[in-house]
Image (cartoon, rainbow, N blue to C red):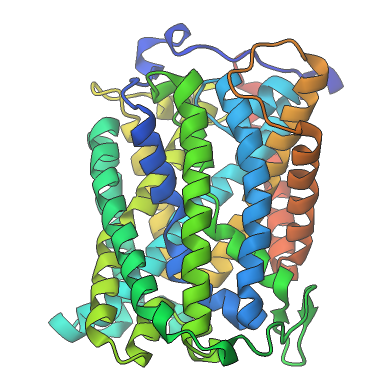
Length: 466
């Protein structure tokens, strides 16, 4: 039994898979960096900075630093593993090859949760920017642009944008990546405009008191969990996205070189962007004025008397936030695809189209995330998504450290510097962030994985193909 649970599976090359289960290799490193930046820079900085400010005050800047450092350590581990095992599936595939089947299932099941909820959260964030404009310009009732939690019926804009991105991905991977690169440029210009307008209005008084709710997670008398780490546990959502690059390994022309460039390059670029935007936002306005706003950056610009720039930012977000959706819906469909190809999910879902795109799994994924986005609030979605991601990041770091001891002489195109220290920062940091998540989120995550274990023994284990 134990041998079965912890049996490992050799990673196959793309050519070893049957033609109907083989993804087309069409991406190069510029596509990957654009995919990473597109996935990372999005709802986290455009929307969740308001949620983070509500939990940490001006110290939300420190929350960004902590979350970014932990993600950077995980990114280095991902870069090493992705170049060693250039196959679709990301953390699920690495865990299967190094730690064993049951661990791979739990990681894959957690990734399903992560990607599904990330896409949903981003769609809700996009709707937060689109709804005011749709109401002002076309008179669309707010009841049709918010879920039941916000006194609405269903969040139709969120469902609409998921459908559009899913259709684009179904058309073709290279075409999607090329359009994504153009939209990423729009998003970077919008954030640059925000910094240029907000930074001159920086007021040192807005940074005091810097840490009004303390460092560690604490519960206020009104039942709200606050503190720098409580904010970091949510803001962590803003930094991941580079892991979506590793899911594109089989679709990369030169994975040995391009994957490490894409993962590390996109992470460095995004850390720099986030620090500039966070300092400009907190310095330009009292944190209470934009805390928990669905459109915090646009709100700050309006408070600075810049309605034109505020509208420009909102329109840019509407145009460019779908790049995040594209990155994560891409990653989710590839996780589903790989698990289905292994037999852990119905094999029929692992068929590709004549263009080499997994259309069936993309549509299946889109339906699930559209239902979530249409009905649930962004903060709860993001918190639960983070739980799945933290487990996956820790697992990849463990895989990297185990292989360094088990196979020290194995070829490594990219080698993580100070691997033991970097791996420890990733594992311990992810563990601490998990403990800093809302208590109900931790409970929901445990329930999700308990359900996953039941499905593994009842269905997946008997259908897996080695």
